[in-house]
Length: 387
Image (tube, helix red, strand yellow):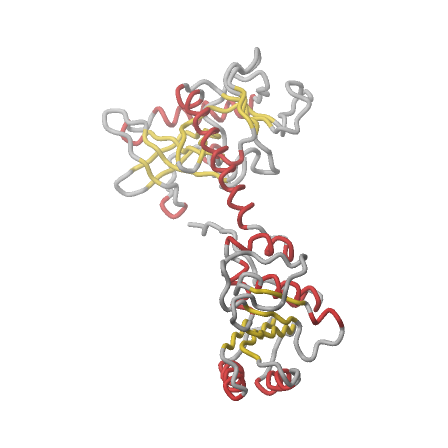
């Protein structure tokens, strides 16, 4: 069984961002980290004293969760008697940072004599080793810093994939999980609607249907002696979890369910739809007569069919015209055609007894259990996956 592919995302390309854009991203992630009285992008000024953003945390505020408008001038003096806490944010858009290099960056931080640093956030576009993290925390303890936060690539991704930061994920990397979820909802609803419409038409009737490519503009005309590669008439079989299953080909067959032995007159189809596009072929008609005569001579319990079923997933169906027309009265189903497969995603080939005198039985046409029951000129197994 083939594995079903799923949609996953590669690691976010932080290093593809310009250095200043990486700083902007980190600063915007910091906005709701604490209630800030002020958050400045000092790194953009060109003289940053070893850090890229400076923030003042409100220690006691009337509403500590209220958003701070960064565009409005504010009184930097605390109004409630508590001193604001100073935080510094350092950003490095680098692929690797060793412990020694990290210590060097920290040593570049410069504060005024009257400033006391409460916390530091060090963010980088790389994964930090345990040694680097230990070095960072040790340096902060040595400097008397109360809170130390280190964000590597993993921590940054964790934050960006949170629903509240979906706008940042889209703005910086063009990915939106919210939009994707909405698209999934739309797709699922469309598939359910398609299934319901098929149940009302194809599911309640065995009438032949027309499968048609939505890009076709030539229906119903075809060049003389040729079949169209943009539409075909088929008999529907059933609706399953796989989608709409359509009968593509039938061949006279012999089948012994107990042993798995089988054979088929598979050089020529045993059943044809009475379509206006049928092309007479005396040679095939003669071979079909030979295969049919051989089949009629088989014991009833061994009479079977080799059936080729085409699968159309509901998601592939563009539209359903349940009214048909004067040429094909059954439903017209619009689905893209591809070379060699036509409108089908894939095919299933199976054996099925006709069930004369006993219940039907099924099997797989395994080449290793094939025997000879039909004349050689009628035997030719089609390759699964082709129409």
